[in-house]
Image (cartoon, rainbow over all chains, first blue to last red; front, side, top):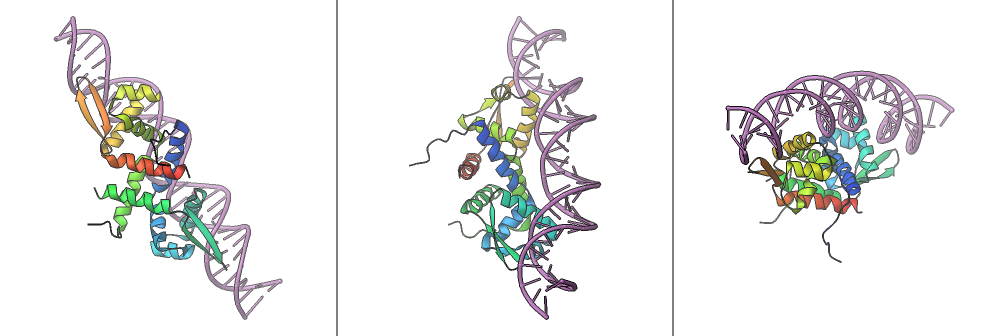
Length: 100
Length: 100
DNA sequence: TTGAAATATGAACAGATATTCATATATTCA
DNA sequence: TGAATATATGAATATCTGTTCATATTTCAA
C-alpha cells in the first residue's frame, strides 16, 4: 500500500507541531544526536554534553514522554537510547535542509 | 556521491534546532500545509485558517526569514508559496511519525 | 492626488519553557 | 541497615515567543 496523498486534519497538524517542538531545542537535539551511536547513561550524556545532570534528566523526560527515547535499567544506572528509527530520519532530513 | 555518515558539529545542531523550532508552531505548520497546493495571498490564508491577518503576516515573516516560503507580488496582493520541496518532505516525514 | 484595499510592523501582554538549585527516590554494596 | 552513587522531581526564575491592537506602508483606481 503506497503512501498516497496524506490528508491530515487540523488536529493532526497540532500534534505534529508538538512533535517538532520537541526537536526544536538544542539540548534535546544534542541528546538525541549523542544517542545516534547507541544507548548511554544519564551521567555519561551529561558529561559528554557538559551540561548539568538535572538539565539532562528533565529533557530526557520530555523525550521519553514523546516516545523518542526508551530506557533500560542496569543496576543504578539508566541507559537511554533512541526509541525509533524515525528519530534519526527526521533529524537527518532536517540536516539536509540546513546544509542547503 | 552518496550520503555518508554525516558528522554535524555542535553549531550545526543549534541551527537545526532553530529550523525545527519554526516547524514547532501550529499556526506556521497550518500555513505551510495550506500552501501544499500552491501559492496563496495573505488574506486568503488568513481567511482559510480563520486567523487574524496580523497573526498570519507575522508568522509568514518568520517562515520567510527561514527561507521556507517565498513571495510573489501581484498588484497589491502578495502571494506566498513554499520555497522548497524540503518543506513538504520534512512535514511528511513528521506526519509519518505522528501516524505511528 | 485622494481613498480604499492588502500587507507589514511595532509595542505590549500573556503564556510557555529551559535551566538551576535543592532535595527526594532508588539501587548497590559493605 | 547505612553510606554512597545515579537519577528524578519540584519550585522558582528568567527568557522566549505568539497573539492582539493600533498604525504604518504600499499599491491601485478613480
